[in-house]
Image (cartoon, rainbow, N blue to C red; front, side, top):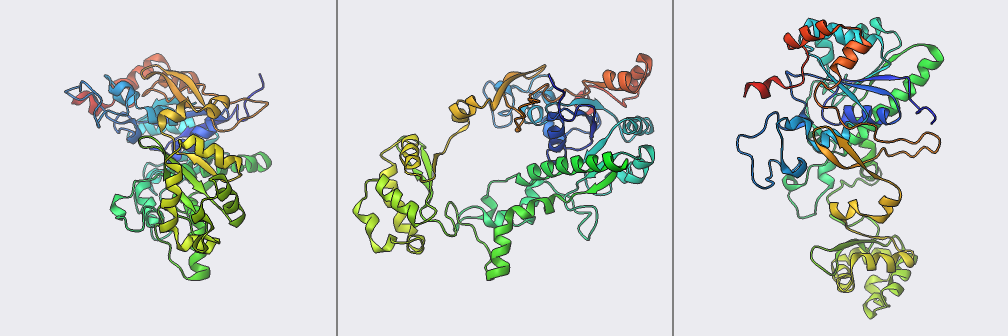
Length: 432
């Protein structure tokens, strides 16, 4: 089999939660050797609980629903699915970066690596003595991607926050939900984390290409907020061109009508329909049997339908509620009208199209068991990508990396464990 696209490159995943680690996952999918660096002194946020609850519930409770079969296990931080799935194709070590020996080992790792990606608050790595000037002094070819919430410069550089905070700060929350809704009840969304991870991976690849031509590494400053704002471009353009401030529209659309989510036959059964123009409206009318109301003047053109959505949507639902979502989709797709069923997780897992494309794959994790996980998103016909391994258990590759790569003896590794510079269990979990 041909070598994977990034085989031979080594990446240090020095981040937390999703944005930075996801960028590293994408590079790992492409074949890079990714080494995730964690600490037994500080729990990674996406690893979930540090210890098993004193009382294990007989059934799945809200506190445990994410774990396989609702059971946290003896080391729940190794059984968290969202961590194991989003950190696939990585090895994992632990290092206490608050200890000089931990910093020294991290620097040794930098000396033999190509890329570092971290998404901590601005200045954290500098405080650890791991700023870019130090790292590039160790390895002039190193590519360092730093992606704090709002970047490394500017008056907001010290601001700390998570994806939910950025969801609000970017204006995304002000555009979501329903026109009569309460913004405090808008479901959190982490779009910015995924966008930033993809941006980090792309930037790292561009910098590696630059290094190939020049021999020089570089520092890349990414603001997670700025990577996300272009995804809200229509709202900004509407304000700059028309002076309109966007508001939540629910399932409506600024110009399309009908455009919404409609109840279908059965319990909690829905379909989405989008009619982009008058030509599609004519096809839609024919597909639903040309009812008399569809020919009325109030629905004659896009503007009229948009202005009369409150009357239009219930009439459409009188038709959809007599059919299953899949029947509605087939009828409208046959008429070249965009439509699709609203699927839940169970339906997605057995979706025939995703099955045919091999989107999910059975993968086994040493402590979480065997389950379906999404495969890498890209399909390379010459170098097929796969789930080579799921997220590492805490400190899983300490001996392999510190011994095999950095050349430490078993005695030295044992002393690191004794000094709690490395380990395989969180200290907080052991103390409670």
